[in-house]
Length: 300
Image (tube, rainbow, N blue to C red; front, side):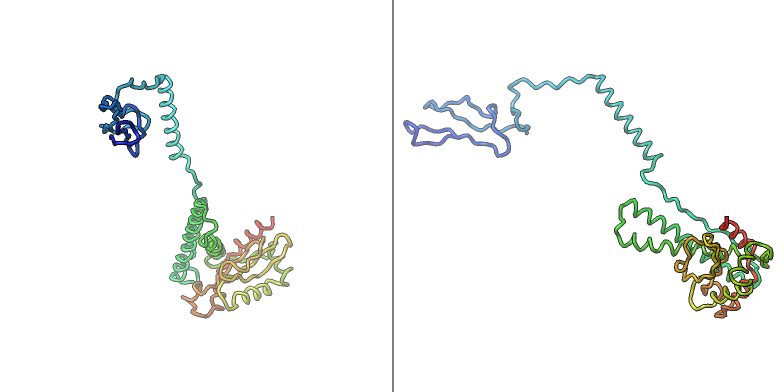
């Protein structure tokens, strides 16, 4: 582009370069072959025919830059290394999980052997078994969700806090039902009069009859939960304890020897609100052999 400039002699023209807004000027982008009559170089913009990176000429007037030579051995080694790392990564993904799988997986036990027990209808027992299986399912679900929240680092969330508190309730509901069904048998099983457990009951309560009155009285209290005979191995003592719902009232470090369910679902189908009649039927079905085995295991 050429414009007149009064400062030049003879009203000479002054050449102005038109700059492209995105590409820096390069000598090869300008056509300097034309001269005006006054000897002033005229520089005109020559539209590029293709886009060129900054710093490279638009024309091929100069020699083409040569690509660096690459050793075939080095290239082959690099490719082999990449293939090896990819294969190793696939192996890790398939055989070495990044996170551990939940280890707590419980299966419900089968207590069909109790069907036909005197004082317990099959309808009541089957409903009770179904409810127990629900606690097993929810224990597994709670453990799985807590494991997922731990993997995702969501330890400060309300979900993690509340489910952590809930886990003990679900787990105890599962385990207490297992203790309860395990210490029952058709026709019952008597306590050995010469066993160490009989001796300890007499020492702690004065007699077996006194202990039984205390246990029955604890189970007859208003509320929902469990009645448990606990053994404290550290102090060598026995306690009849009320457990509210599933999680309140447990004695830390003590072993449960005898468990009786006093939720309404344990008796209302057969006895309606007559809890005392249910307790009487329960005592006739106690398996004292199992209770004695628990005592021996805790006293070791």
